Image (cartoon, rainbow, N blue to C red; front, side, top):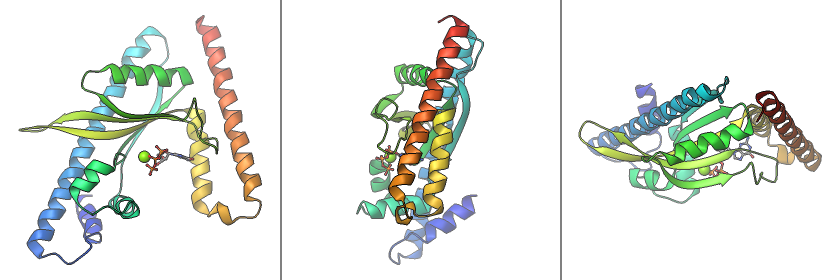
Length: 226
Ligand code: GTP
Ligand code: MG
């Protein structure tokens, strides 16, 4: 895994640096990625704790699944290049806030806000950015709550602040987003005939799944007498 990362990193060095300089840059990059991995573990644990605690009040766990991912070196390089930034560790850390990603799949929309509020009330969590694509879906129909947060990780001799992107969605929102992503990336659908019609159909599916979410939530609330 580590060897594979270093190998990928090798391809990203823009100009020939001397061997010592290269080795030290590769090592620093690897270290930074390890810090992001630690930040992912911290945030995942926070959600697991909230899931256990919130499930004490009702019979159900609000979290269905948690998926985590570390952005691949090629994707980091591509984004840095796209933004016209230099390929330095400072530029990566100060500009890319989605290197560490935690996706929390919930059963019901209300659980999303309950979890997000509980997370943001914790005194070691700082909110950097919040995008509510549930209240304000994207024009294509995409729904999720996105948070960029900063949390500390505690290392041997220092405390380091790390940014993590958190996406909270329901099973239905995740189902739609996964399939839409697959369709969009399988083929560049912008060049497909009837692109507008396809977009309309996808958007209609997103709206149907939102209706499903609110109806399922209404049933849950009826059952639990909320
Ligand atoms: P980037 O981080 O450069 O993508 O721009 P941004 O910060 O404006 O992105 P935003 O916070 O809106 O979304 C970032 C992530 O949300 C993406 O990497 C996807 O995981 C997810 N996402 C956003 N929009 C869509 C969408 O239309 N469809 C799907 N399937 N996923 C989306
Ligand atoms: Mg982003």
